[in-house]
Length: 280
Picture 1 (cartoon, helix red, strand yellow):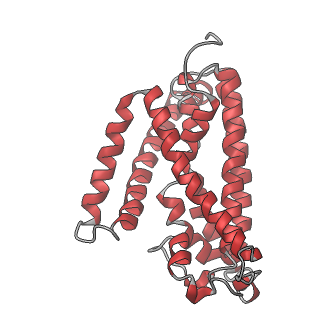
Picture 2: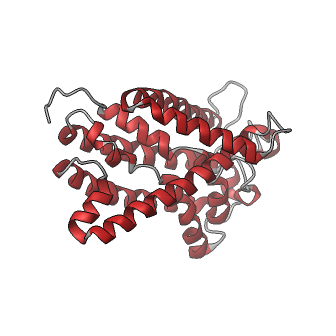
């Protein structure tokens, strides 16, 4: 495999992974996770990030050694037998289908605010069909498209983080700092260890999608160099964004008030005055 072979760069692979991971399950599903764990959701994101790092590191080693079509399904077939590889492949396919359905449902719930007369089922079906058609464009085009769309989602999260930091430290003239805000009264671990364990199910699901790096390895430019870089970039970006997002959100809104029907960012911006916008 030539070093100058045209293919996906580390940046494109990273953006594809971030685009696959950061979706409706994060923007909407994080509400349920934060509600379950309270401020200790930070522990959940750190623990899940460590687990994801170990998985990604192992995937990186195997992919660099053998950048072949099929990725982890192929690795399982080679090392553990054809039966195991078959099961792993179909489990991943089933999980992806279920994940796509949940993502489409979450997105439909969010955009239904603008089109209330359209059913969630119809919106979700349209989203799934649209995404499926886009994937027929080919690796190069879908890589560029995904990079651009991922950039929009990442920009939204970074913009929220920066806005929250401005309010927390009272940078704006005439706006007193929020400081610790709701953290002064919110219990750190409202559900105890069980709350953290329960939130981990949703947090790990919010990390799902990073395996796209392994699946796209054969389309990468110089996989032996590109794949490890893409995995490092993805890992640090994901964990950093998730932890910062949760950390700056906690001072603004009581975690017990969050529910699965609204994104924490939307709840914060919509109900800013009721939760202390511009004041402790």
